[in-house]
Length: 231
Image (cartoon, rainbow, N blue to C red; front, top):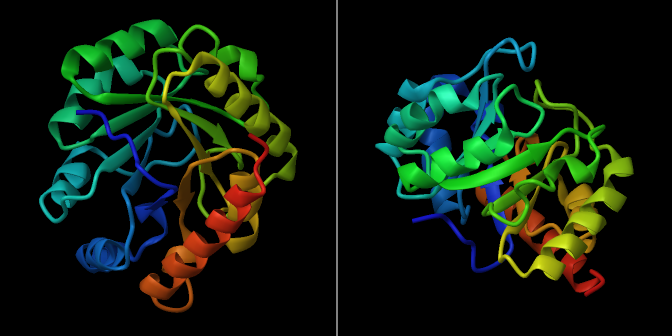
């Protein structure tokens, strides 16, 4: 069943965790109050980096009951949907800039019974989502250029987030709006005020301090930001 968060949701990104202690990173996120886990899949073509495959998703799935948000930064999402869903991915998020037609990707994910999200890069117009925005569970507006962790949040995406929130509200789909890239207590609050409801958080969770304290600080910030959001 597709993941539909019942509150503002925090999804620590395992790309920022210590790969030598990934099981500990999963456990600390779950015990610290995370709502989901985010896994960045990169193929070395759509973006220059190479990261996780289905085997790692399967290993994470075996260690947690948290929903797994699998971000497919790959050229050919249609080719790999089944593999990542079978490995335990709950929501498969693809980029509309990929080679495969977005409506076909959504239909294929639905046939598998997976949740599906559509993502856009910071420089992609919101209109690129038009063919599928009414049919997805998640809309992801990237707040960094995809490919590497540790980048700074791009504030110029905030108007696009607000526009995405307005369109989702107009459509009444129930899809959630995700912010991914440079999310910390400050920028997470800004994204929440712009209408985001799902926050991918990497270095701000797995950096200095305890994962529990970092998640608590971030949750307080996004909840405060959401109170400033324009209905």
